[in-house]
Length: 115
Length: 272
Image (tube, rainbow over all chains, first blue to last red; front, side, top):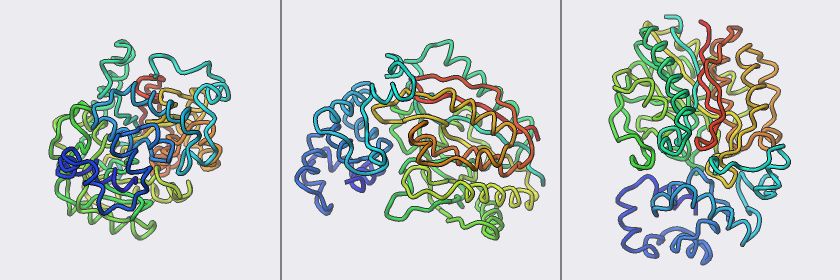
């Protein structure tokens, strides 16, 4: 799934093909039905939950004209809806959620500016 | 020739891409610090700049991930990101294939490094260049340390890479500048984007400015992840500059957490 996004982020022709036929652009990638759904809707929260690295995902969100603050919120919503990140670097320690994470760091919370 | 300039700076995409959302005073302080760094770099009259960054799945992916890589081309392109998103227009950046090859051959004597004749710069390089060589008139030799997709090279290997870079820079007749780019504590592009562990950052920068090798090599990725986020893996780029200038102290000219930029923004130079 990350390979698909890696290729999409790099290749403007691929972006055009995806824009014209999202489902068709997935051909050739070994993707589950859940992954295909996340990539075609797109469901940013589900993609983050499954384990897509934010450094890849943020460009996919920008490609879909999702503003920065909305992108961050959709990831938070994804954790609330689907649960902790399953795989990848963010799953190393499990994800405790934004507020609990802030508490552990001794920070009150994200500032609105930071969000 | 001996290295003529060494320093580190932040590279977060929001520094340019979300500049309009930042507190103007904070943004201006950072931009002034970048301008000061540019002046220092230009005063050193470099013939080329080695920029050690931690790219973000723009060229290198988990299908074939080098721990360390260097560019070997006469030109590069960037940014790979959407120019409107990053706030930097696409351009061609000069390289120097001959210089790269000489440097790479020397680095290979002490450190394993991959080379790349094609490289599309992402924000890890483009944001610093936007401020430091805005006319794109200085040949760039890009270097990359995998700080994104574990398993990552241990910190002592990043140190060895820095030492090898220094030997290589000193071995060529060109005047070489060296800059590392990255974040310290940060959680970029995640639900925790905007959080910054200032205490952690200041401790690391103190160690960095004192060239405290033992302290810097004592970091553990698992603990760093808990305390300072996955962005802290990028301390490898800062440590590479320390290794290249081992024993020489540095000066932190600017440090300020700017949450909308998602990092404690840093400008620092080595007192060569």
